[in-house]
Image (cartoon, rainbow, N blue to C red):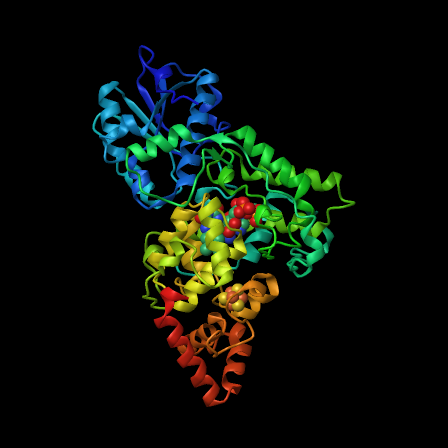
Length: 527
Ligand code: FAD
Ligand code: SF4
């Protein structure tokens, strides 16, 4: 697809309103676009600033730029006036504000509008941008199910909120899977019926991921020409959806081929199906986070599909999916907004180590980490449990500084935008927020990985060993973590069993585990 800046100039005579559309505001159903205004120009721009605040996966940059171009084309096709600027055209503008000042001056703009950004960084930038003699207005993005003003009614800064209760209120509020004021089927949450590991007989029926073939050559040239630093790998075809049609096709594929086992295998991991790497997950997060599709249409489509296929899609599968979108996704956003900007500095466990280099290469003998990292470098994707219980758990147990952990997650995943990445990383995986998101740290030894995956079977390390040379590093690290944080967690009810087990171990065993864990930490780069 050609960059479309050529179709937008010269601007209509009398153009005096500029409306900014950020790369994650690609919602064609936004009320802005209900009417055509010849005096209004929509600005969509590839910006160096957005490429430099962190190092992105190369597929992520391609996906954003391609989606922005498609969106610009869709708007222009509907008869709106669009200015699309590529990196070639914005290269002399160090920041978004520099570009806006220049555009406003160049086109004699009197009115500037923007939608509320989802990132604190951009909200600050735009809320402080109030040039003289220009009328500036902020509009809602109209995307989320919990309206922005209601966030403060649901969440309090620095306070733990329980996702389950928030989710129940959202179910009632949106009247989803309800029978009157009671949950359909009598239970709010069917997690106990879900979360099975995959057995050998289950592997055959895992569906292939639905992949697209979007040409990246032009964008890759631009990325290289402007020396944009990236991570990961990208061929000349991008597999991710880059427009609304592809986003809807991905959703349709999920409903037809993955929803029936979504909840059941939600936490499972396997290395036996390299080409079926997304298992029963929807991979809809990029389409959602760029707003190409809305959470409500995702949920309604999935529920409609479930309603007409109840003979082979059980209630726990659809409930599990609905919970992720109206529960977890909205919950995480609420946590972000009531706690920013201080959330970004939280380091409750005083973690201070550097992220080992193998997070950028995948070269480690720990098979679980090798799998999750290599898949992330190859596809800019890992599913929730790989993020939480493989890479996240390792960083938690080894005390990696949350800034380093955040930076990695913010860069590597196709769907990573700070509002959703940070509370998941700093809060859910690293417990750096001291329990605002989670009631206890998601810490696990090798036995969890062994239970939920087949990774251990082909690992250099032995999952049943604790202190031997070839012992699974997670085993000693786990007990070391438990012992190091005894003062913090011993009175946490949800950890009482763990501390009971620790205190039952004899002193020699405890010492051997501690010595082994220290050796592992000293040798972290060579694991
Ligand atoms: P599915 O498993 O098919 O789930 C469906 C949808 O539910 C997802 O697309 C997503 O929109 C939503 N969802 C599920 N869990 C969460 C959650 N915990 N928080 C928010 N939304 C959720 N999600 C992102 O969108 N961007 C991120 O940057 C991101 N970073 C994460 C970092 C860590 C350390 C962890 C543990 C989780 C992170 N998540 C993030 C949440 C979740 O892992 C991804 O949303 C999910 O893996 C995306 O894949 P999917 O679309 O196949 O999801
Ligand atoms: Fe991971 Fe340990 Fe299992 Fe190896 S043995 S795959 S390091 S959990």
